[in-house]
Every structure is written in structure tokens, then in C-alpha cells.
Image (cartoon, rainbow, N blue to C red; front, side, top):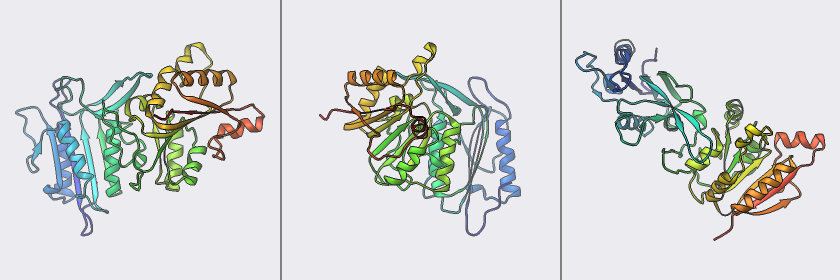
Length: 369
């Protein structure tokens, strides 16, 4: 049960319940909101005015009226989250969020491989003409991050399917990055301290040996690591939690899709692509990162004069990557060692050097206009 508010803090509750879906309606979600509301008001002593209630019940079914209710539409849900991420919430305040309704799993496609995103479904998710209008997991993450920036006393209960991604890495989502579906928005324009710096991105950061050390020695840059393996992105996030780095974030996602869908033109100073999986099997080769489409997206998103730093231990793939990049067209240059010179080594790089493997390095530069 949430603690009653103290003289030093204010309690804020957001209760969302949806039964009256036009497709696959539910029964009992708004009843759950009624029950939670009674606990908050009658047992925890929370004033009704500190509770925001968004419900879409079936008509002619009586429900609690102690707290005024508005429909659980996408616009109302976003507005309620925005309010909790504003100056309305002070440091030390307590925030409690409860959602009961449908959760969804939507396919998201671009020029790159398909992936799926989880979401919360508002009452009007299918009211528009352009497909589903839902509250995606990365949007939920960004909203929660803004709330956590105000206060660390935040409790969230999601009573729905497909909710595992909603709070994934929430402490490590960029505070200024609100990604909008269908619009290209730079994934990280400001770090946790709100300072705007040149952005560099590591694609496939693994355990983060390069990313963590590079963030430490280059405080003048904002660094984003994109890693599609949840265990490694969590590994990095845990280390950032122990030693905060305001200029670094990690995102668990498909890098090709993120860059194609959410990164603005001419917005990245440098990309780092070190030891990508060669995907030897024929049926897996479509997963190789550096192909014509991906090279074009890297070229589009780099600043004029921006660079892509590449390293691999696979000579055949190195030649193929250089050929694809040259067609984009990048100006490519084979290097004798790591670029930038003196950069931290990756975990694979240390291992392969110990084994005596031949390593290949290159820099690809976007032409200046």
C-alpha cells in the first residue's frame, strides 16, 4: 500500500482503466480502478484532488464518483504523464501510476528488418484513420524518465499484457529525447544534465568496454550505445548507475531500425561500428548490418564531414563493407590501427589481439557540401 503523504511531500496518483474498447472489450478494469481509488482515499488518506482518474467504462455501469473522471484517450493519457513530469511534482513527492486495460505488441517496419514494440492501448487506439494510435514502450519510458527526473519515489503497476518493455532501462532514457512515431527525431540531443553536445553513436556496444571508457574520457561529447541484446544493455546500465555518466545513454533496440526511423538528417558527429557479427550462414546473411540501405542511412544521418569508424577481424567482410560504403558514397580510408587514435579498446579487440588475429580498421567520411 502506498505510504500516506507527509508534511514534506505530496502524493500524486494517476489511475487509468479501460473496459469499453470497440474491439475486444474488457470487463473489470474500471472496477480495479475503483478498488485502488478506495484504498488510496479511504485507507491511505490521499486527498481526492491529488488523484487523476482516466477511465472508459461500459455505459450504464455505476462506478466510483469521489474523484472526477475523464475518458482514457491517448491525448488525456499523454497530458496526464506530461503533468507528472512537470514542475507540478517536486523533489521528494510520491508518484503512483496504475494502468488496467489492453497491452499491445505492434510490428514496426522501415527499410531495415522488422521489429516489434510493446504498447498500452487507450480507449481510442483505433479511432484514427492511420492505424493504431497507442502509447509505445519507448514513449512510456521517456515519460517515466521525465517523472523520475523530478522525484525518485515512483511506483508503477501495469495490469495488462505485453508490459515488460514499458519500464525497461527507464533510468537511462535521455531526458530530452521524445521519439514520435512516423517522425524522425534525434535519439539523443541532450544528456542527463541537459547540456547539448556533439552526438556519437556506438552500434552494437556489447558489454560496453569501449562506450563506458570513451564516455569517461570525452565529456565534451554525448554518446549513445545501441545494443539489441537486453542482458548486455542492462549490464551497461548497471555500471552507469554505479558511476553516473551524464553524457552517455544506452538503448536496447535494433540499431538499423532506430537509425532509419528516428535519427534526423545531419545530426550525428560519428558512428562507431566495431566487430559486427559476420553472420556466416547463408540464411542469416540478410542480418548483416553494412549493406546498401544501411550505408545510405548512415550517410543521411551523419553531419557533413562526419565519420564512421569500422573495425573487424574478418578480411572478406571488411572488403565488402568498404565497397558498400564507397557506393553510398563515403570517402573511405584504411587505417593501421584504432580510430580515433588512442580510443579505448572493445572486449573483442582485446581478446583478438591476445590471440594474434589480424585486425582491419577503416574510417568512412561523409563528404562536406
